[in-house]
Length: 173
Length: 108
Image (cartoon, rainbow over all chains, first blue to last red; front, side, top):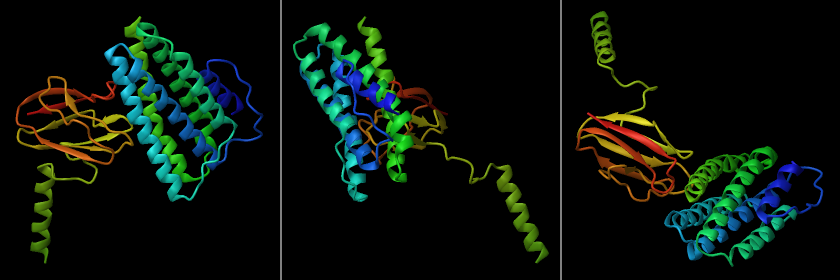
């Protein structure tokens, strides 16, 4: 579990970052915060890519990331509101947020094909890391059945995004 | 009583022979979009039949024929799009938003 959480944050931050030790998996409120932070990080990446992306398929992909991750976040917020669960910020969600900010900062100076390649490479890594975290940590740890079901229902989106990003990555070479 | 039962039995047999509806049979022309997959991946309908796509996912999708003969535009989560299949043929289609999603509609 700790390894999965570290991998997710590591890839997002683009560097090895030590996470506070977690004796057990995240609680449902913590999972909610992790989900929202993870989606928001890719929404922010997408907004940057819509502005600075060069290739039309990269920009279209970025717009789709904004749409899809916003929809998943909206579903997550709707569910936790219904369940009266308050997302609880935690070391992992904070790491995701900080890592996302760092990633945007690293991408911002890039232009043209260099930006496209870096953005898509990050999308491939990010989505793989999120899928790993969903499979190894978030779904196994979720206690509430509806939260677990939402995670399961969200997973195909990340898988489809990963496959799409890989296709674009191959075409940019 | 026996004659009535016999008539009912005969009707049931006729229905079964004609391929009458079964609870286990999904009606053709009813395609579910679930987990980023078109279900069934291949469906066969008659010319003039209504075809329905229902999006069960959290995100929007489209059902867009590769040759553009039909295009749902965005189907929002928990929404349905319907069109009438007016032309015979084999139509491969995809989701414009998620190109890994593909399906085939056969119109006879």
